[in-house]
Image (cartoon, rainbow, N blue to C red):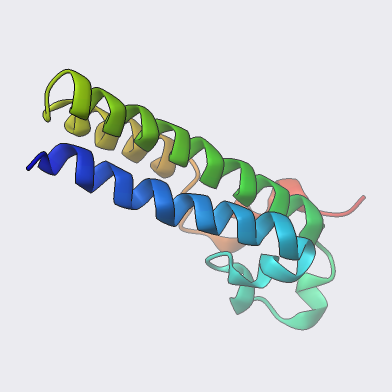
Length: 111
């Protein structure tokens, strides 16, 4: 049993489903973005929800691609390739993490 393959392929499915949901529900799905639902309704209206959902969709599909590559390499080369996939995913994930909600969504402000 190749634990590297299975640990990556599970996340491929999760990120794929999330990406599809963000793509289908568009601006309605923006409320599921961490921190955005904590803003008041008036503050949420200041931000481009469609842009937020589009960015989340793209991030989910990018993460899915990284994990898909990790699962294929884990299956073909060595199970330890999953570690590389997880490290790369962690770097991509943490570059978008902000402690301040307003700072995180500043680029989505409507003009």
